Image (cartoon, rainbow, N blue to C red; front, top):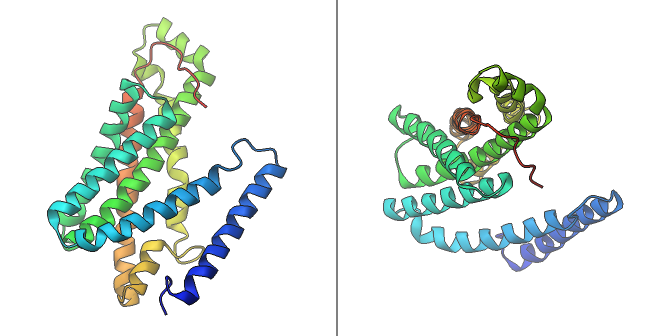
Length: 251
């Protein structure tokens, strides 16, 4: 019986609602701001997944529509990351260059080396995963960098006063920010199969692939995520590194 069948839909809704309730209750008791944010994120995600499930039925075999879908994903990722940093032309261009370059490099390598067959199905699957993870890593690295510059502004200002270029004055902060942003992804990759079973691996098995083939697909995905994240974070932070005045803190 499928998940959306009469025997699967109701338990799914109940489970999701209870989990959202747990999240709201815990955050409320802890006095955390925006305690409904996680539940609203789940609701939004559910709606978007329902819509995209119908759309992908006719998209997944068409290279043109796959390209359109990836462009939409890329645009949403750039917009989301930019909003987290604070809307400005400078932030937008840095995020656009970072995510675009990171995802582009990884996709070219994956398909040029033959690690995955250049089919619309694989392009959509790994493209969406790479863009989504690059967005998260870019946001973490850029936010940490801007916070670090603000926290160490006296030090940065001192370097600038001594004649250092802005990119030199913030170099150590940039390196630390990139490292911090990559830690969760590196740890998840190191513990794959021991602590977690990644979604791509489980999904591939559920889709009918033998475990070995699913594992091969997953390791390609993990390597691509780390490569795209490294490029995206490094480039974004470098573009933001040319600071001549103290960054404005964002919420």
